[in-house]
Length: 561
Ligand code: ATP
Ligand code: MG
Ligand code: MG
Ligand code: MG
Image (cartoon, rainbow, N blue to C red):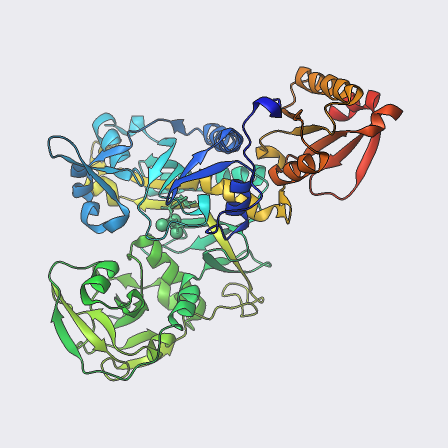
């Protein structure tokens, strides 16, 4: 590709809102442009990288026997009604109406759609197992779209869904995906952690997040280098934000009518209070029949994923993790005010005055709840301080701490969707049973940002070879010098002939500007054709490495091989 006819609109300055390296360099390097909040255009260079990531993901999914499909982006609301998620999903769901008044959602994920496809087309155990995947644009109306490709409102995801006849088989499918994800992230050249999460519901370790280690990432992780344990401690980060609330005097407890509001965001909006003041209460029944309540501040919907995180947090801090494994979740979230049960409270809740909890009654909430005035805690548990150096809950070695970016998430769903949507199969024994499902996501476009977060210097991107937009960058330092031009041209043709993906900077601009652009866009190998051609030599460089190597023009071919 000749730079003179290509399109790489590099910029000296990043836009003001770009705070993190990937956002800054992907914009400055001419990979992407913003159209509106959370919406990005992929320019030619950026699209090449995106396709490379897609292809690596695709290759490994195909190798694992998953079957690629393409599902409609529009998803009928009726399907979401069947699983109850039309109401639960909240404002993140982009809802659209067609000309006849029928409602749809722009797919943020496709469990409903794929389950519908399967229930209509799969009847027998003979048709199973199956794993369907797609690589497609997803839509989520994120509350805070930010950091460029890291949190978009429109983004590319690989989502896969497995269907099995038994839990045992489903676990096999799950484990295969786990291994496949490792292969994918290894080939992408990323430094990542697989973060274990205990679902409780199924009684095993069947949800994992794949988190790329980056400074200032949104996911907060403690991990053990010795035994491989890793847990997401999102709560820790949240507490930090809570500290910023001003101190307050206790106000009298009040029960208020909150018709039709339930999600944290809606309650906060309705009552005009900060979301951080809304505390969720989860009630657990222990094996011996005693109930315990756990208070958790939440600014998020308590879907299973979040529960898992809390399990991990609990796991890390309660004296006996065995006891916790025995916990069964009671349906729903119950405000324990007035209930005579012990309360395990997040220790930081102790310091939170005048917070809000559900009143264990439809359309009512308590405001101005205070601890210990209104809750009678038997024990405060510090959920939020799993920190560097704390003992690993598995092997007791000191934990390490990092922040990261969630780039993948796998989950054994069980029969949640198949039961809600009646996706049954007829088993070998002639009986109808719900299909056991798993789901597996990868943030394809987020991965592009994650790679840059992990691999850059002050001058720009250093692409891992596997996803670099081009492998080789030839710079002709002075295109007006016919000797330089001839040699550069000749090397360019040679590289093309060898099937190497090469960008040839044949523009008539200063050498300084060429070097700046080359560093910014981060192509792994560089051949600089300058004055040394008179001595029959060019310079070889690897992006990110200090050394330069002078080699004879005639030796370049050998180097390229
Ligand atoms: P997050 O915790 O970052 O909000 P999530 O847990 O909501 O992500 P999943 O539903 O697990 O996301 O989706 C699968 C993958 O899609 C995530 O692991 C992530 O890599 C990617 N992803 C999710 N939301 C976004 C987004 N707004 N922009 C870009 N990628 C995203
Ligand atoms: Mg999310
Ligand atoms: Mg997440
Ligand atoms: Mg997730």
